[in-house]
Length: 351
Ligand SMILES: NC(=O)c1ccc[n+]([C@@H]2O[C@H](COP(=O)([O-])OP(=O)(O)OC[C@H]3O[C@@H](n4cnc5c(N)ncnc54)[C@H](OP(=O)(O)O)[C@@H]3O)[C@@H](O)[C@H]2O)c1
Ligand SMILES: [Zn+2]
Image (tube, rainbow, N blue to C red):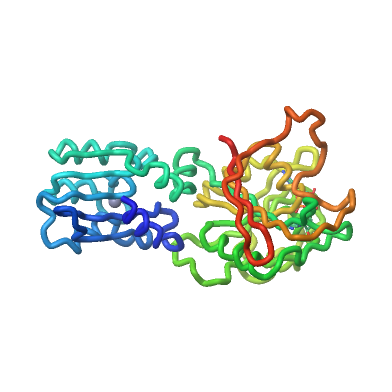
């Protein structure tokens, strides 16, 4: 199963909106075939492995996700697996999507194949954390990403933030964009930084187009901002779009309440448009609102060995603070590593 998970990982930059899946066929303790899913529309891992296998009769198949039982862009794997004459199937986790959800395994069992579930399940869930979250909650998996100084500042008092971290951390954050479907920022960041938010490492091979999105509650945006004028796809959530916006900008009209859009409505609309995973790259107010409302799943923070101070300099959490420690927004640190000269901290929301 470890090998199947390794194979699945090869699909990281290609499979969206599908999950990453790897498969290994074993006979007498030796691997006789391997497969993995490369891209939506192409062979699923099980079929890829079966195609490579001279004689699956009596063999054991290890697959990192329950075989599907529906006809989507390709046919149902459960039928192919049941027809292959395998003696045994070992599955890491059930497919949480309601069109499968145990039915693939049931069909294969009904065909007389012995099925074992739950082998390296937590590793498999982690590998497909975005797919699993989106399939279960019908909302995009949200990654909060920020670069801060050791005193938690995202920018100086003059709103300067380019660059807090060094080259290696910036490369790493460009790599994150390659494995997510979309990116979201607040209008304050458009005004302060005028970012392009492009995917530019060229790793992503998936069929899901890269989507950039902005939440804006006021009318301070320029139609000439890079995100709007560079010809790429951008969605603007706003009660009032600037005049003369280029036609590549897709405006989603939305009412603001106290200067804030409803972020649940924003996430729902992004999901409806096919976004399963979303990176939020600031700024301060947007991160704060997502943290306050618990609307995030994972956090990657790059911490630079520097302090800049300034009570008015934006930090990762702003607005009214909690007065009691028992009200702190707490989460779980998962790992910390050095990336060049900066620290990269990965955390998960508790839920
Ligand atoms: N170091 C980093 O990683 C990093 C990353 C990004 C940005 N930054 C820095 O952060 C600063 C900008 O942060 P910011 O806090 O001023 O702006 P921001 O979070 O980028 O944008 C906030 C604006 O978004 C709009 N908005 C609409 N609905 C919202 C909601 N539910 N929650 C939050 N915002 C909503 C509001 O627009 P209206 O203003 O129209 O009401 C709000 O003022 C800049 O200095 C930038 O350089 C740093
Ligand atoms: Zn399948």
